Length: 430
Ligand code: PA5
Image (cartoon, rainbow, N blue to C red; front, side, top):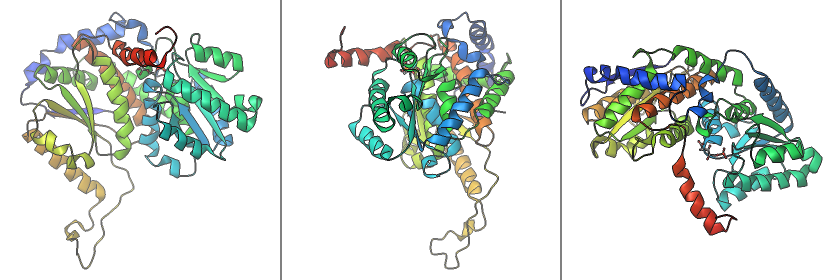
């Protein structure tokens, strides 16, 4: 189970400060759980994780088996909340180089940019390969995935013929509304549901995340079990709840002028999980002139770039470091008789040991430098831990945003660039 070590946040803050927020956190959590706060028509994610397998989950598993048997490549088309969750899950559990491992279908992502180079690279990768696509869009009208979808549908039809192509197109969208739902119904594509009361960035535990995960060889059932356990264990209305601690401390630090949070991890495969977290908190909290800026860092690589800024730059940031239990299989540093690199002092030490010292050394350096640090300790990197982490951050975000006094479930600011772009593109109505 997730544990939050808050022993390194004291400086500007004190324990009485934290305890004084008890009623405030209680109210925020209650507002969320009772469905009485702003945006309360988007609370479906709260109750998604269950211990029982649903019909939707069985269909997801069946579709994934088919895709795994008839496709070399699976292209996941989507952006924002319809993209970051599945990518976060696959990279964290299967590793950054998952596409080079050979056993599972390769998974590529499209529709999350407007880059001609990225598109042409994908086309080259698909050349001569059997592939299927999963179009993910709740609204069904988002421009980037819509453009990629049009082209990929054509590619499938040219390769397999119209009827066979239909068996390779999987659509994840709203159950009733939108252009994508209409297209899927008319063309007879297999569809999965994004419940109307689940917003994009809270949708990873629906088919949005679960189908791509299952295709990549991650058990969606285990992900759900981890999330269901988190749902049960985080349903505690006191500071024993790590979600309470996290939500309260980040708000308290914000009030003390710490306006940037860095989510840090020593696992390179965490990069897209950090991206998912960044969207979750950025879109949920950054509004009404308020919000903690969610930044991310990959240690130790970024200690050689951002490290200087963290240690001695403006004192407006705090860190949340995610720690996983090290893998059981160890790697040790070998002896070298000539010792030309001077590394023999590490002979026989495991890489984990060195990493742990890097973590401890960095922690005390940053705390000494005036950076409050929370450490989120969790289990090994696997499907169950993944589910737990997703739910932990979603719940914490809901509570934290209500403490901040904003609606966590809308994103009105995202529309501004779209309006300008549509006008420039000459879209009817703009
Ligand atoms: O969190 C959100 O709601 C957004 O990031 C959306 O997921 C994103 O804009 C994509 O929208 P859609 O799924 O409708 O294509």
